[in-house]
Length: 170
Image (cartoon, rainbow, N blue to C red; front, side, top):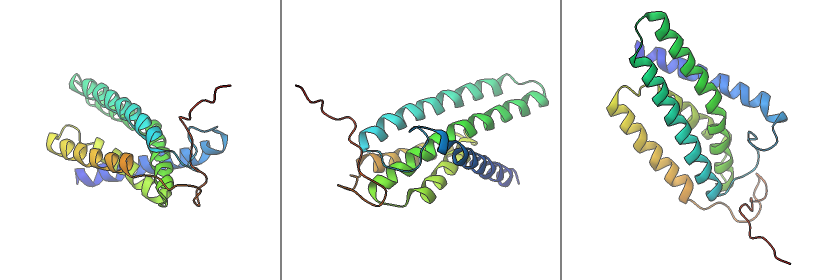
């Protein structure tokens, strides 16, 4: 029963994050837009930064959970964790969606499922076997997305990004 509750909470966090990104996207300049493409280098730099941020956040939550004495504090820390996931998850959405768009796959549906998967498995960090399996799956997935070349030229998601580009002298 506990697993079903956590999966339900994960999907709720995922949908709240999806709602958040759909509301923020028209007002964001380029960070949280789900349209367009990003190349492999941009994906690698972004996913390393975002994964480090998620790992630091998870370590912070774990440290808070080890010093909990009363039940209301435990639920407050869990609420803080869910709020943090709601804030971090739109960045995962945009990275996955834009990278899959660069490859030529429909990124919106797959990217959202991958983001919800990340939240769902991060809820089980105290279970070391599940967390290690999660890390292996994520490393394989990120390796695939980082090594698979994007479509050359324009595709239905736009033109390829040219960052970093060589500066022209003169």
